[in-house]
Image (cartoon, rainbow, N blue to C red; front, side, top):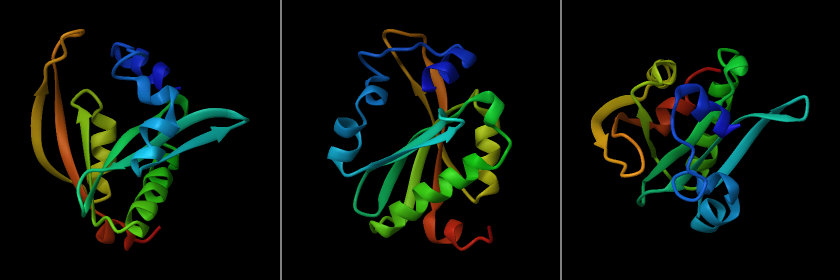
Length: 148
């Protein structure tokens, strides 16, 4: 599923490097104190997302992706809420995330839920062309106290 999203946007698929975490959730997320979820529809995975600890109070959102035909239906917001609830339960107060600037729909969702744009960065990937990302921080209490 993540690979399909990468292909949709023309991002390189690197199963031995950048995308290795998607093949071994236990090693890359659970064993490092993180968590990971998938969303399914008709027994097929249509979305995913998780987090990893970053420091005492902040975790980092990872791999929040949904197949194109399942976007805009509210499941991304529900997944983000589920992830945020677990992060808050574990004592994190903020969630950081970095997102390729091409993912404009995701940025609108993050901002609608109260995420604040904090930075931008240029990622230099020797196996791929460089790309630009936006960095966001979400206050978990403020987000989780929103209705819905």
